[in-house]
Length: 392
Ligand code: KG4
Ligand code: ZN
Image 1 (cartoon, protein in one colour):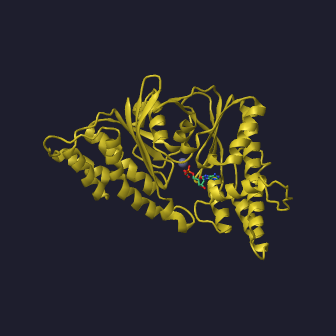
Image 2 (image 1 turned 90 degrees about the horizontal axis):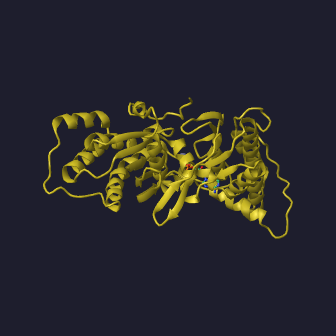
Image 3 (image 1 turned 45 degrees about the vertical axis):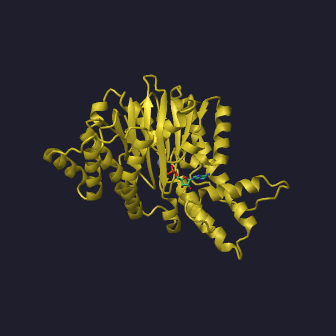
């Protein structure tokens, strides 16, 4: 089954073409992520209307390039005209995005229908005005080419991204896991602890009540003078501090919000406020201060995440731990979660760093498994974007 997948939930326009066999082994025919980081850099976070503009402008060139790389773009001998009925259908899908309406129509008129079986797309959660851009293109292509339409959950994508294993050359597989499985999803927009008792089952045990982990990394980094996304900067500074040859004492102490709340929810905004006060107390922000506060910040984040994850593993007798999302690129968290899993004697899956951020491949993989759901037909009717993981 060949799937074209599209992801536009935040500040990455991503697309891939993936060829799956029945066992779930797959070849990646194309996989591209266009990051908008440079554009949002000076705004301290993702600026929604700019994200929408960038997705709108980039999605069609990316579609052409993806099909071309996958060797699925073949010109028609003679251009054809699209029927009035089909055009009406497409106008209903696009409503305001007339540029991409015209683009999709011209693609159909000039190029043969590519030999794919389905179009998968992120329907949520994410920035609604950004999600629509990918959703509409995917929906219109599935109508025009008469292909299966697979609306796919972004968080489910992050879970599958952690299970991708490279076999050889362009061949990959999804690793089988034991249930119950516990997923810790940490990104710029989300912090979730998700329990899966079996495949396709998701129950959100807890989530952040305010800022997501990545968001608090980015906001705290901004207080230290770094541009968006500052998460990797904090990570680097704290690593420098940890790796100092001569140990330096760290007198900075930050809170561990909701560490003892007795539930699986999180709250990180207090941590950012505490960073703000520490910064204000300083007459001059030295390099050493930045290193110390970054190291203490990472300790605080890790302690809360690890403690709640450990409690959930024990309460639900999880056999597998899955870590996913942009923040799972963080070195300290990767090693702390691996250590936790070793102590708890459970399997752990941490994504390859290149699959930690948003990408199209994870949507293709989650989409492929969605077609195997007994109620797959129901998902065909999804017309809304911005949905959460379904709790069954
Ligand atoms: O999953 P993602 O690419 O996008 C969202 O869905 O939000 O996550 C992006 C987030 C940003 O907040 C970024 O600062 C954070 O992941 N991030 C990191 C690291 N690399 C990326 N945070 C901490 N340490 C890192 N090494
Ligand atoms: Zn994400």
